[in-house]
Image 1 (cartoon, rainbow, N blue to C red):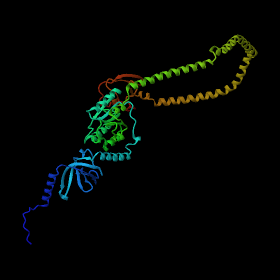
Image 2: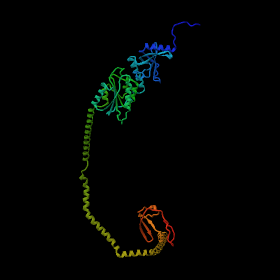
Image 3: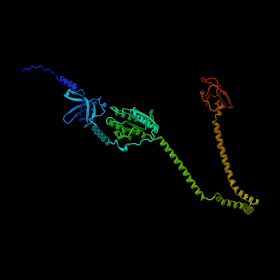
Image 4: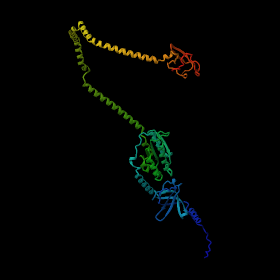
Length: 470
């Protein structure tokens, strides 16, 4: 069959898909779309986010690229009605069109409030807002950390109020308090203060103040982000929040340890009034001095009352003094009486102590001792003779083994000044004094020259060739 003749151009599938892609991007290069988020399951492992925007009649695929995700002031959530800004494009591989989102915001204050309430309930269910988690603020913090914008009235109000009430060391961590990076910067500041060491070059604050001025719900939205709320709840340092005006409430206010209606009130909550503290200390000091005086007066009165019931010191010693006087007056008569009594007792026994009586007693004792002495003398003589024989035998043995017998044969004993016997030449040095003991006395000598090899000296004829015993 012959193909019909036509002048229509012929495209490949890729060419046609590319043409459609260019047409869509040229026509819808910048669009704002309102719809409800559906099918959002979080960020993909690649870092991109994919979901669908829908209304009651249609739906459109949406994508947030990895580089755009951190810059979104509001992160997509399932069921959230939003207004997105981006550009339309196609995905040629599956013949689909999609919107590449560059900005995302809730569709009106009602949507924001609904999102805020849903997030509050979810975080409260985790216990992040529980009252038992909140800690007491330090009464006198040495260092105060302030997280806020370095410019504007907020930081000036806080510093001025702290200086007026109780001057303290303040460390300011500058952050953006509005915009896409506000939540990330505030979170980093809270974590950074907690990471400081108490003994480091920069002291870790005793209390933190997170503050900013008033604004719309969109302006304060960074303080409703989950990462900021979790950072405040996890902080080991007590946190005071003062975000917005008194009527403004953000999620960090629920998680903080103390919520102040204004930044000035936050400074007041952080430090006491110095003048009030001085007055209170003075009042306590006065009360203490008054209590001490009252206590001393009470003890003085009690002492006087107790002393009134005690006898006088003279009355306590009067009886003893009288007994002493009585004893002193009777002492002379008692001594005379005792002397007479002892003299009479002596006279009673003096008759038995005559010289004749004592001589008779001596004769009786001698008569009793003589038989015993006659028996003791032979035994004592035998014992002395036995001891003499044993001593003579030991003397002969000692003489037999004595080295002095060897000295008589021509040998000598060499000793140093301490009496130690010199057995080897290595024991002495040239110039050392020595004693040489021979058979009839001791000779003092001095070592001369370096000790050399010993020479054998042949004894004279007729003498015994016996070596030294030492």
